[in-house]
Image 1 (cartoon, rainbow, N blue to C red):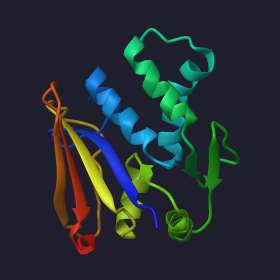
Image 2 (cartoon, one colour):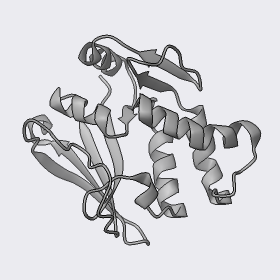
Image 3 (spheres, rainbow, N blue to C red):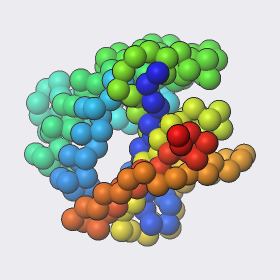
Image 4 (cartoon, helix red, strand yellow):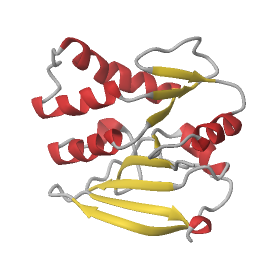
Length: 189
């Protein structure tokens, strides 16, 4: 059984609006490493469309938009090549090396986890909340950025029950960001 891992960038005040983040090369390399080490990515519709819009054109055309630094290109190529599963009740089809998941979410994700592999990574806000409610996330990573945003979505807002976590890893970055990895206490052996 492969683990389902969640990773998200958050500000010190818990916001995860990508526009409030300060991208740097070291954090992009960290994210690239995570994606390259996964068998697949699991996205909800919003995260899938946001990632596709931002990263797919670069990998396909080799032309960087003005906002993108050269050091971001390896991340674009890595996410472009990754297998993706997209959970959506509104999309009729997906491409970009993706497969659409519809129907019973818990059943579909359990089936994915039963496949052999190194793991699946999930990102975003809405889908991970549902997966946490179902107890399907095996590892959480919060990359905490040294910024106060004061606005934006917050992961797991509205969670119906506590999920107690145990720290299993920590990595500090030159920017002052810190990646904190946790495993649910009920999954510690």
